[in-house]
Length: 289
Image 1 (tube, helix red, strand yellow):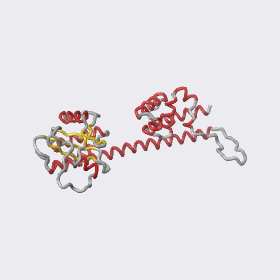
Image 2 (cartoon, rainbow, N blue to C red; image 1 turned 180 degrees about the vertical axis):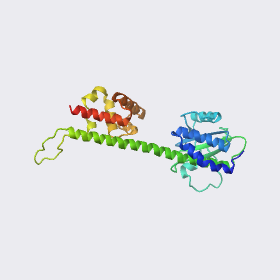
Image 3 (cartoon, helix red, strand yellow; image 1 turned 60 degrees about the vertical axis):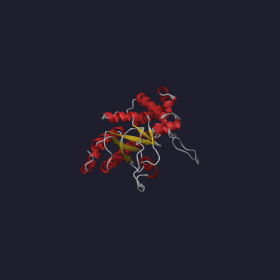
């Protein structure tokens, strides 16, 4: 059966369920299942948009087996976005462009794909297309209400995705601010412990021999850490992200994560902020001896 107009009242509840997911993969899987049931699709999934390709998520299987089979097929062979299709128009004109003279097909509506009738909705949390919710069925064409429901669920995914990303950013900022506070406390301690030097009359310069702690590793640090780990630890102290450290040291982000994991193990730290703090403490304690 086609979508009943009363089902549109379910969209707020769907948004609540989507917002309960704490990963993008989990949210996309939940959206696929919600849309499949609400729109009576044979198969349904979310495809990420990268450049001019539609790419299936490789982070986990979908609960609905036919949908998961389609996910695996599209994961192995991503589909290009064809000209004069809905996806191409969303990419070039955004979601607020002028209506087309006639309905545009989806890039998934190709004879060689044999997907039957296709309904797609744009997931664009900030107005930029990042993913597409796609549902298919073979027994009857997609009616106007089904297409509208697909678009509505896709919009809910965009709202939930924006919230998830913003929450992750807030956690990162909160960690950075906490790290900066801990670093400041450590540097103040170093100032208080440093020996006082009598300044030369008329000379300018610091009255306390304080240097940037993270730039001069202690003997103790060199005993337990490799040179590369010291470089990574120094950049952690500077508040750098994994991506920034990777760019600075010309290594991959995964390699940075491996170094950070080893740092945490050697320093007995439960997280990267504590690792930075313990590295600074190592330097300060060694300098105070």
